Length: 191
Image (cartoon, rainbow, N blue to C red; front, side, top):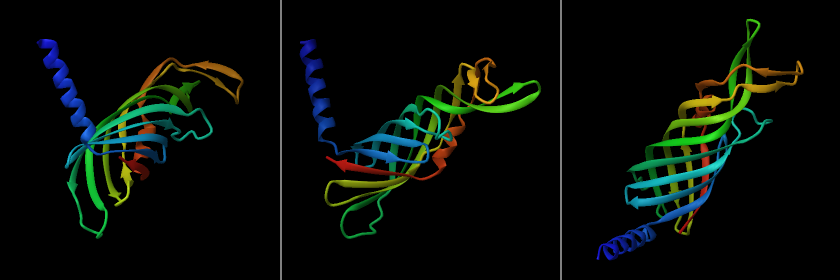
């Protein structure tokens, strides 16, 4: 009987998730390119999950990989057009990844900056405006700054001096997260 109840609850939950509106597409911003998925929980809340490449400040370097999840609240639905629907939203989130970020190090009393790959974890704030057409297309413009830490191994090859530098692993502020203050554009297919 217990297995039957657990199976029944699982089926009901999966049908409930299936019935909710969803959208899938791409998100392009100052930090990189993401595959984006949005799932409506009810008429006033939705979760958004993004998996993408993080280019950050170092566009000539190695791109990083990050995963971001946000829980958003729709706080206004302006009636600006006859067709389609508008939504103003905001919400908290978290992002984790293996990304390139600038790391300060000191050699002989001078401070230098170097881009180094490392683990990143950060809290994200998400605010935006989205428009869903009468046909299955959604456009969204948003801001998503991240505030967190970046941890690296502290080893790199300095091309200018030809020396392999080991300045010790470092934990520092995730600078690239501030690029989230630049607007990003999302285009999603609704289903």
